[in-house]
Image (tube, rainbow, N blue to C red):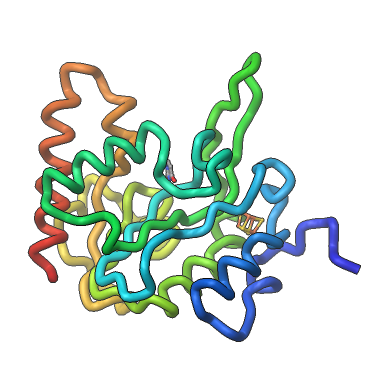
Length: 209
Ligand code: URA
Ligand code: SF4
């Protein structure tokens, strides 16, 4: 019988065959942590297996949870705008999240985003590792602290390390920047400046190809 309780790790669900379609199909049934009951569906990464750039965000938000696709809500729209400004074609890149189910808390009728905790990040990491292995991107871009800490360790600080080449064997080039949501959460007067800095980080990403 299929387990109804979380097993503690996505590793229990990652198949041997590691093509993206096989991974996506298996991830749809993941019960590696308790978030499978909270989110509507697993939001797997999106993009071609031939992608040279792979972006990793935090976890799907409200709109991603409904659509079943990463970065389609407000943060995703800002991300699209920044990518276009940096001259990166999103359809040629692969975009995914460190945690693949939406974690939320009800506030009235709204579903408020909750940050995934370390055990959820650890439980979900096998999917991210399998995506990395299937794609083998040349450039790996970690968007925000959750993605960066999930793959590089809990001590990692994005603000001190953005727009730099990081020491890691996860890809030919590994770099980190802020999460686009951080721009949306910032003071309105700061947005222009923060968006411009984010676009500069993405230009740096492009220069690594
Ligand atoms: N924020 C993320 O980190 N990922 C998404 O897919 C959407 C918002
Ligand atoms: Fe599995 Fe990740 Fe969803 Fe947890 S968040 S159930 S580990 S896909």
